[in-house]
Image (cartoon, rainbow, N blue to C red; front, side, top):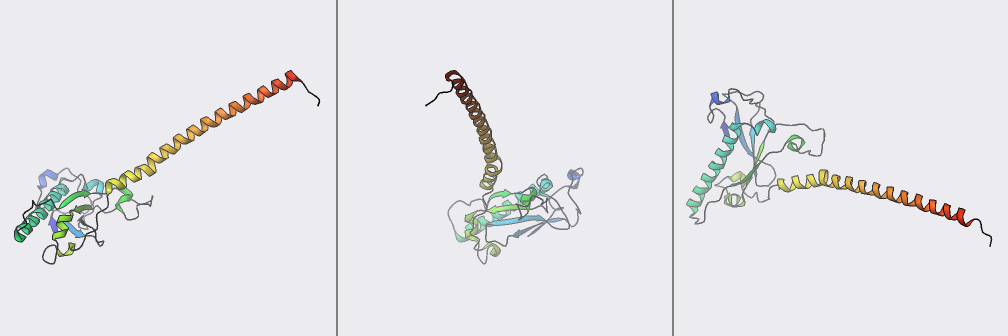
Length: 207
């Protein structure tokens, strides 16, 4: 699916906003594609040659306008689907969340510390009730994508624990070990001093 930029925004409103590289009012658009993995995920990309990094993309009102439009469109389609199948339950939101990665996390090689920001894209994390309705006549491309999306909150928490909290804890342990070593050194010097004093006071003894 494709959304032309010009159809949803006012040019005057964007007069002083950086819209990225190779932007063109007549041709630039967003494109929505499915990932090759069988996860509940749709990806929204600025269609090349228009290039925007995620740091810029997340600041663009046109991105959020398009994101809201997509969420409403999917819910409208799901509502019609419920009506068609006479499902009596409330129509859920089809999108659980929208996720964007930044810096080296934008690429698959997240462990590559030399990676730089790549072409911007956003992940639409689809809900299970929406996916369960997908079949040959309803968003066929998404049929059978039952695998859950990556839990970005948990991934961020684990990364912070590994790279920040644990390193801070280890640093504190090192400080405590250094303090303990200093105390042991002082205690050892005191013991040596006492032994030396006793040896001088008692004097040499013969057995």
